[in-house]
Length: 152
Image (cartoon, rainbow, N blue to C red; front, side, top):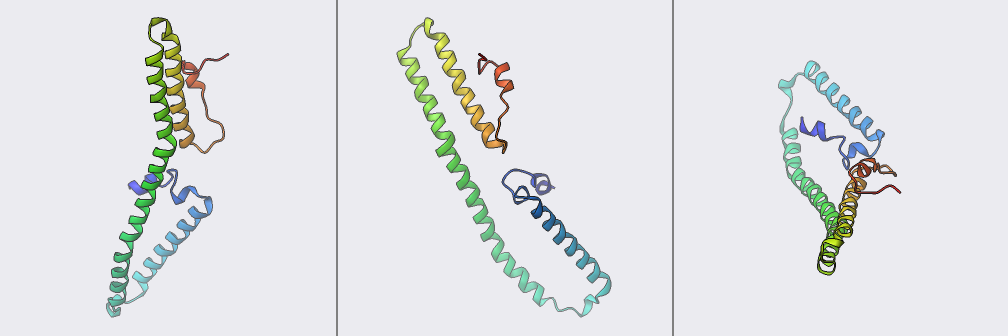
């Protein structure tokens, strides 16, 4: 059941376009119809299973390789996102916080430090939202309500 629930997740073949969904549905219907037809029509006692066993053996050798390529590609995409995208933002955030803490000491700089911190958190939230949606515009209304962004 987990594969069915995760099918509409971003990055799967089911989100590439509607034609993929129709093709998967079509081949599922064809497979089910063929299986049902063969089970009622064909005399299975005269069927030689050696061809099917050879096919299963071949597929058992191919499936781990395909799965390994899929896992490698997924991990590579995640690592590139982590190091090139989010990693740079987090590194810059740490550098800014360290500089602000070292240079601007005292209670009278607390508003500026708080403002910089809110902008850092806001940038991380916006990057996360940009990665999670395919829409051109990202909704920021809740960032105004939580006072990460000031309306002027």
